[in-house]
Image 1 (cartoon, rainbow, N blue to C red):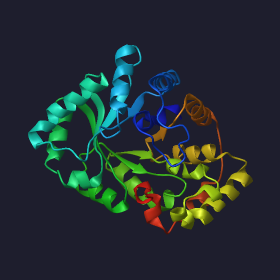
Image 2: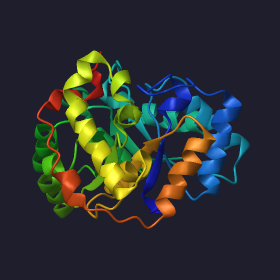
Image 3: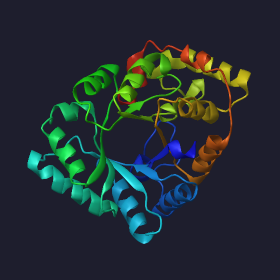
Length: 291
């Protein structure tokens, strides 16, 4: 399962996540995380222009460790002020910062920024033709967004979407299989729902109280199956055949090693009990609505 993992690096450039206890790591700690990821077999990093100095940290690591070259996916800042004909040069500037000659993937940071700049669609495909990027992608949230991209912009090579124990197969399977049929890779994020699954009920912010019954259901499943939160959450997504890659974010080497250990284990549990969890408060599955 290690080859399905992408290491998310927002934590290397920003304080990020509802359960983040340690804040943004030092440069030395960030390098240790990247070193451990590479040594463990992870070969793809996910970053973004909007992730603080994450790109600079990765670039410095790449330049100091030429024998440990990652494939990198990054995203266009949704707040950019670029003109259409500036995009190719802008992507090359990203390559320079990241210490690579080309990108594994370049993405629109979200659906709205894409719809505001649909003229960039042809430019990003041109970057692919020129070999500046290998794959073109877009980060999405809702099923409506996924449907629009699959139906109308199927030259994208991949979509990146939330998928987890709550934002699960009951909500996503039909669309994701449709994407796969069109040759569009599915990359998932938010496997731990930004750390919410690790929160005790007394620690859950008041705004998220409607999710408490679902968290209790998860706890009951864990106890019955004798599985940790990490194991249940990670293996649930990894075992879905229609998912190509699973993005994880970590704050420390210890967390990363624990996730890698889980990936190597053969864990069985009834997926249908997870799939039966149907969160009706869809808006609370998007962390941007938590503030």
